[in-house]
Every structure is written in structure tokens, then in C-alpha cells.
Length: 103
Image 1 (cartoon, rainbow, N blue to C red):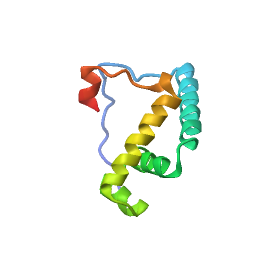
Image 2: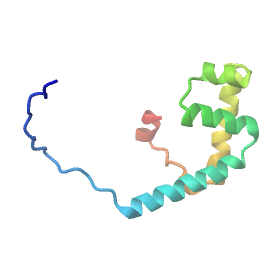
Image 3: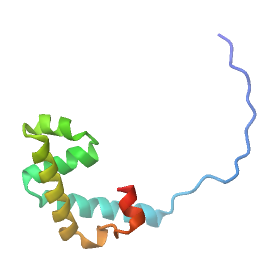
Image 4: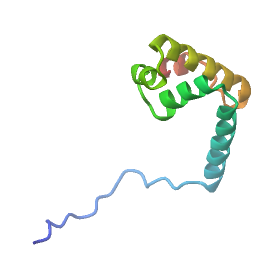
């Protein structure tokens, strides 16, 4: 077996970003805070939020897994997110026209 063709290194416009240790600590704190808040949600709300946003499943698959209707998934998800916002107000994204468009 031969080796592939040699390719020279290429310059990039920007150097790679290095991770600031403070960012890692903040990220770990955020994950811990969110995990603690998720534990305080009722079972159905927690399941809906985790399956929709952590596992990234569509509503119809979540409904199948939870053995409920798509409408129930939407309701559990909405209520769960609202409760998370109340439990962790400093983590809530400030709603502006720009963030609304992204959501």
C-alpha cells in the first residue's frame, strides 16, 4: 500500500481559538445548575424536555416514546421550559426580536 499524496499545510485567516479555563468552569457550573433544575421537574415534563432538547428528537418520536399524543408532548415541554425559567432565572435568554427569530 502506498501513501497518499503529500499536501502542504495551509495558512488560515484566523488562528484556532483556545479555550479559556474560566469558560470551562462556567460551562460546568451551567450544566450542574441545569441538571439540578431538571431533577425538580415533574417526570413527564422532564422526559419531554430531555427528549426534545438533549436527545433532539422530533415531537412525534417523543410522543411515541412517552406513549402520549403530540399535543401532550407540546404541553409537557412548554410547561417544563416555563418551570425551568422560573427555577433558573439567570439562565433565561433575554427575549429580543433577534432571539425570537432564532428560537
